[in-house]
Every structure is written in C-alpha cells, then in structure tokens.
Length: 284
Image (cartoon, rainbow, N blue to C red; front, side, top):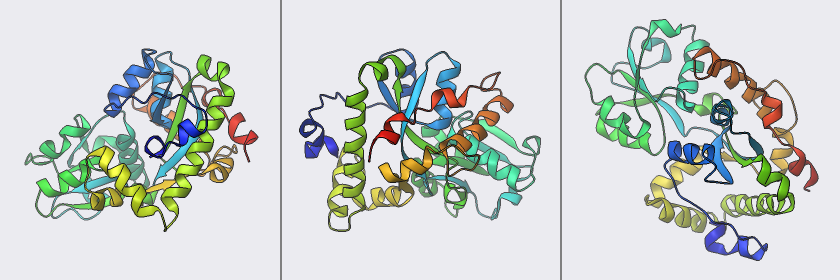
C-alpha cells in the first residue's frame, strides 16, 4: 500500500520490493539476496541458526486469528485430537501454534501423529481420509475449509496473542550502514497502519492490498481482522524486555525452546542478540 500511495518516495526512500512465497523469501534472505525480509520472530531464529544474523527492528503485527487449527466433523476441541493424524509444515509457525495448543491441553507430542507437508499443499492433504486436522494460516486455511465439508476451526492464534509476531528483519551489515533509512521505513509503516485502521480509509486500504494479493476484498478483510497491526507506539511496548507474549523477547524465548525441542536446530539461539530495539526507542 505504501508503494501505491507513493509514501516511500515521499520519504526519500529508494526501496525495491521482491515478492516471494514465504519459505522462498527466507532462503533468499539467508543467501544474501535480500537486505531485509518480513518474517516471523520464530523463523528468524531458524535463519540465524543457519548463520544469517537478521536483526528484528520492527514488529509489524501479531497473529490474532490468521493461524488456525482446522478439524474434520466430529472433532470439536484440541482434546479430541489425541491419537489423531494432523497435517502441518514442520518447523514453521503453525507447528508452533499446534504444539503450544497441545501442551496447554496436556497432550504430549507422541500422543498425536504429525504429517509433514508444505503449507500450500495442506488443503489436499486434509482431504485424505486418515488426516483428522491441519494447522495452517490464511488464506490457505479458507481453501482447506472449502475442500472438506463439515470441517471447522477449533483453535486460532487469537487464543494465544503474541505467540506469533511478524517482523521486519534486516541484514546486520545493511542495518549498520543505513540506520536513518530504516528509521524512515518504520515511520512509513506507522503511517500505513494508521491508514488501514482509520474507518475513513480502511476500505481503500483493503482494496489495494487485496488487489496486490489477488484475493477478493471480502476474503482479504478476514485476514486483516485476524491480524493485530502494530504502530510505533505499540512497538515501544513490544520491544520492552519481559517474559510474557506481549514482548517480542518473551515470545522469542518461547519459540527458541520449541525450536530446540523439535530438532529444528540443536542449540538455543541468542535471542537478545537478534532483537534491535534502538530504532523504535529513538522514534516518537
């Protein structure tokens, strides 16, 4: 939206945007093909474990319903998943959502069977008779609900606010060389959030974003409502160190443990060394 409105140029910024499927964007960032990437806090720890030090300078939002667990007819609660086969892309955010939901309901990992699948393949996987549920994000979740009659959402990221943050993560060397430009980008983001949240301009914002995504505006509205956008003021709280999920520190400590427990990487990452609160602290 900031591109279409010309706000980046207005701020004197020359930014080239490259559009990727999510997993491919992480690979490109890790291969030094991008200066920055929009990535969840947990997945940034995964790229860090591979040697790419990406600094989280901004939390754009946290998931508030866009990440979901969908179950077939007859399964109504997380408790009902015991002994069932569940499709999920292992190691990504919805594996984290699923594992957290299972733990909160006293179900051990070995009491369910996880079936690994690429996220965009999960609607087809869900159609398989031996799969009882999937953990997936929107808009793929909507496709899965349409694919299997009688299926429904039984748990969402709204049940665990702050578990999954989306972040603007920047290559450390580029960040060091271009601090002022990154600060301006954060200010443009703040302007974007306000435009989306303002009732007077909300419909226009949704139309622009839906058009870029190739999604019907009504369907896109569902994704917007499942995303809690964070402006600069909100980021000041998020970047304050604490153990809770209302802090990117606490959320990242949690996912760091999850990643090690699930063999995504072997040793815990230095979370504090990957969070860069300086720019948010300097902005008003």
